[in-house]
Amino acid sequence: MLVVMRHDARPSDIRAVVEAIEHMGYQAHPMPGRQRTTVGVVGNEGRVDGSRLIALEGVQEVIHVTHPYKRVSREWQAESTVIRLPGGLTIGGEDVQIMAGPCSVEGEAQLLQAAHAVKEAGATILRAGAFKPRSSPYSFQGLGREGLDLLALARRETGLLIVTEAVDPEGVDWVAEVADIIQIGARNMQNYSLLRRAGRAGKPVLLKRGIAATIQELLLAAEYLLAEGNPDVILCERGIRSYDTQTRNLFDLSAIPIVHSLSHLPVIADPSHGTGRRDMVPSMARAAVAAGADGLLLEVHPNPDQALSDGAQSLRPEQFERLMPELRLIAEAIGRRIAEPVGART
Ligand code: PEP
Ligand code: MN
Image (cartoon, rainbow, N blue to C red):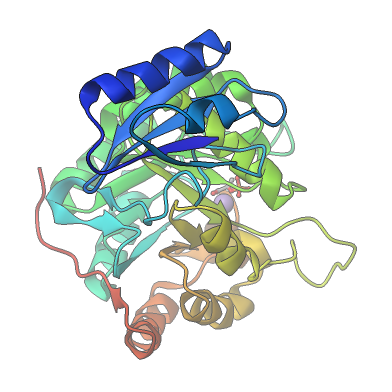
């Protein structure tokens, strides 16, 4: 529930509302806004009886949040969240951020080649995994901390920001030292100890939709991050499991406008994992921008045929280069802009 205060409510009125909420056995979260303060109520299982609160001095209205998730909902916050990244980049505003790179960090030459290629084509964020959650224990598991050092090197060399995955709570701190955005992968969307740790890491989190997760489950997973005090959460549609074997996953384009209507958080799309097929990635990337995605996550490998993971869905650098101007046209057509790289960052 949300208690909306009048614009002329006094600090003592707000305190009285907080005390009344706490007296009812819930937690109160005052959120000062430009016009007025809103006090959020959490800790309730069912509907809260607001009659006592509406009668208090300075209260304008009481809004019942109808979803099980609270802080991530549009009811809780009507304005879209705009996440500010180093170098003046934003996610969730007008700009559409392109995050691109190989599935895994495989070595210095491969990573730097990929980083330069995606930067030259206009990506702003380098994405590559140092810790890889693989379905098989015998598959390449990533270079681990050595991979993080290589990502730090690529950041210094190119000025690209870094998004990379943390697979366990202990690894979150290592990843947070290097990454500008911490990725939580599909297999870990409901790993609540990992979510709690990432929620306290002080860096934005990119949360991927689970392999068979509903949109409500995705939003509830994001709620864990916000409940830990991290407001900077980016949601990612990466396809869900289906019965059809033509594609690796069923890329759920409709999740983009649905998430935007239910939540104020930015949502990006990953057509690489969404389709699993290089030949389908460009069309689905264009469609995702047209559907209003706040960014794209695209796997690009300098030599996909030799990739240690996800080669079949990785774009060749020249395909990525061809795609970028198409994305710019589509973004412009809907009043958005593909973000420009802005040189070396700190
Ligand atoms: C990845 O981003 O490389 C990855 C493992 O994706 P997902 O968690 O969506 O399967
Ligand atoms: Mn991958």
